[in-house]
Length: 414
Image (cartoon, rainbow, N blue to C red; front, side, top):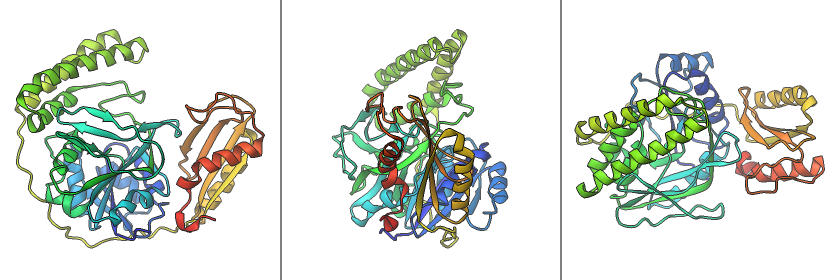
């Protein structure tokens, strides 16, 4: 097992309930040496205190709508050899850090990135991509679950997702961390592009998985419909100024406007925004582009070593993972048993399957257990058959086999 010390950094603003759920999940991680750094506003600090965790984590006060500056504040407080990032609206699988950090056994590895599951908890929202110097993404065709090292071409970088990534602290701090000129959007991509100039490699790790829900914010609704595109426009313009040849900038911005217009029309047809919103949102995008053309881009200074020592998280964790199964009418009984298991420091998964064709969903309950619901004959994998002809015990065995490598701590597998 990778025993290197790691600081898990969570940035949260105006989402205390989600922060509590995220921290509950982090508290079940298998890794033996991690600290938790929470960069949050007053509501976030109060949520941590209400959990009884105020002395168990590092609390960094921050209440500014700038994800890059917030992450830098987290890096400044982090005393781990490695730093890992996860968003407050995400929850990690218990084995997340074990898999995400394993490639750092190689001295040439600078960063790692994992895969991100969407709202259903079973379908990927994000896998492997390369970034281009105009801010574009190129999907990587990769099969299997073993870590892999993409080889980007000229002007490209391996892309990591901000809600599931890890870095050597000294290397990330050495390049100045995240650029505060990116208040939101393309902040991670900028880091990846700058890190590409440092000797070493970025490894993508398919089994390092987190569940990400795309929570509502000032920029988007709970259904992911945009509410404001100004910062996307501004960050895009800043990114192009930093990384793209001047001849590529105007075509890239025109392509951005066209792509966002098409996306907005799709949201409108689906009834997620009003027709009048299309023009308003496009205007906010173009206003952001104008702002980004003149937003100051300042040299980044290295982030200093932390003033506080490493604070190991002292959670009561057995590392043992158990799963329960039953019918929907047994759900209350199952969740009570799961709650007892969690209280005893175990990882618990509940399969609650009814006699139907309902698609499956996975969620992390506020009480701290994993819950998979749906029909006994329903589909869990988009690429799988629509109808599963299986008995109850056989279906439970199949679904547990699918998640066991994620849900179990490697040292406790039988």
